[in-house]
Length: 45
Image (tube, rainbow, N blue to C red):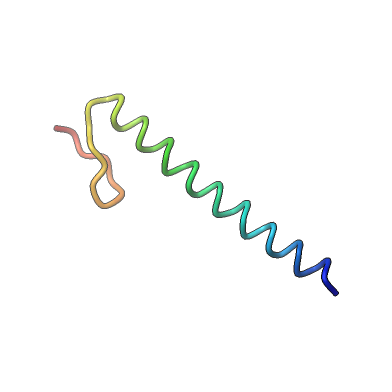
């Protein structure tokens, strides 16, 4: 009974880690080009 719950929790954790990793990569790419992230979008300055 515990194994399916553990698998589901692991999937959620890995999914959230992927989202945060992608947001960080987006921020790095945006700042490298001289922009700033506002409301999730890269805006040039």
